[in-house]
Each structure stands twice: as C-alpha cells, then as structure tokens.
View: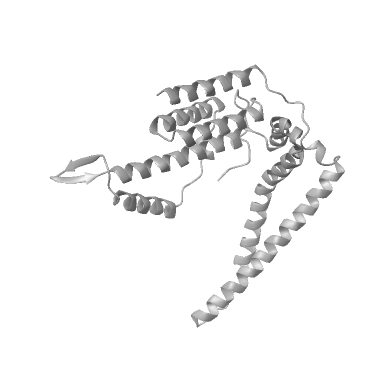
Length: 257
C-alpha cells in the first residue's frame, strides 16, 4: 500500500491548500456519518473519482487486496445474508431475503469510499504541509489554552515516521528469515521458539524506533526546533474556495435528496 507518499505531479488538486483537503475529509465523513445511504455514498464516491481524475492518479498506486481479505468479505456477506430482511426476491419458487446482504454491501462500500477519500489526501499532499494546516485550522482553540501547535507537530512527526518505520520493520523481518533454523521434532518446542522469536522481534522493533526517534530529535533541534514544523506561509486561495463550494453543494444535495 502506497500511503503517506504523494504521487508526483502538478494538478489543481495538488495545489490545493492542505487545510482545504482536511476540511473536505472531515465534512464528507460527517455527512456519511449522519446520512449513510446510497445517495450519500454515491455522491462522495463521485467526488473521489473526480478528484482522482483531476489529479491524474495512476492505477498503479492502488493497494493490492490479499486473497484472505476477499475470503473474509465473502464470509461476512454470507453470514449477513442469513439475517434476512426486506427486500424479498422470488428465485425459482423460493423467497430470498436480501436485506442483510444489502446492508453489508452498503457498509463495505462506505468503508471503501472513506478509505479512498483518505488516500486522495495522502496521494496529493506533502506530509510537511499537514502540520501547518492543522495549526492554522486549530488557531481558534488557542483561546481555550489548548496546545494546538504541539498537537500538530506530534501528528506531523507520526505521519513522517510511518513510512520510515515500515521500512525498518521490513528489514528486521527479512533478517529474521535469513537466520538458520533447526528442525524441532516436538510441536511444543516449535511454539516455544516462536514465542521467543516474537519477543526478540518486538525488542528489535522498539530499539529501531527509539534510535530513529533520537535521530529525528537531533535533526529537529538542528533546524530550529518544533516551531519550524508547524510554521508555513501557505494559505487558502481562490481554488480552495471553489473546492469548498463544491463540497458544500454536494452536502446540500445529499441532505435534500
């Protein structure tokens, strides 16, 4: 899954202010929370597809779905279909209730649309722009003595650390697979070895994360401290106003329908 890494390119979606994209995700997510029907799901899906077309997102960045996940979805659909409910369709002189299956399909589609909405922000926004946008959006909360800048810096550092830690964990896992392993005759001994290896992997992962955190802290100090992370001159422009107007029209249309 290619996340937290913007897709190279220059489009109207890439040039939008990061705060506009975050507001769009928040508003559309709230819309689907209160109106999780097919009309709302279809409208948000259309917004995601339109944004992907404008940003020229290639199909290669889409995550590959493991076969196990398809099996779990099929099992969930089967168990949901057993609950019955309207509508009822007659098939070969047999009444088949599709209410549970339709509900499961709607919930699954809702999750996919929300995931696509979040991935669009990830694919078109530089991680360095997230913290300044959050600090700007949360500026009114400073009157309540809420540490908005510190929260924005913490979120930005977490987003920057995810790809780095994923690579670290992949290297650790590859090194573990290269270690020679003796064949143990008893299942109890194999389980015992698995638990010991699991503890070793966890300790190595924590050590790698702490080492990376120390290096990142030194780099932040050398560049002027945390204030530089949440500081930026980027502000919303005319295109951001147009984008928010389109989102507002979508919300009004969904509520009206």
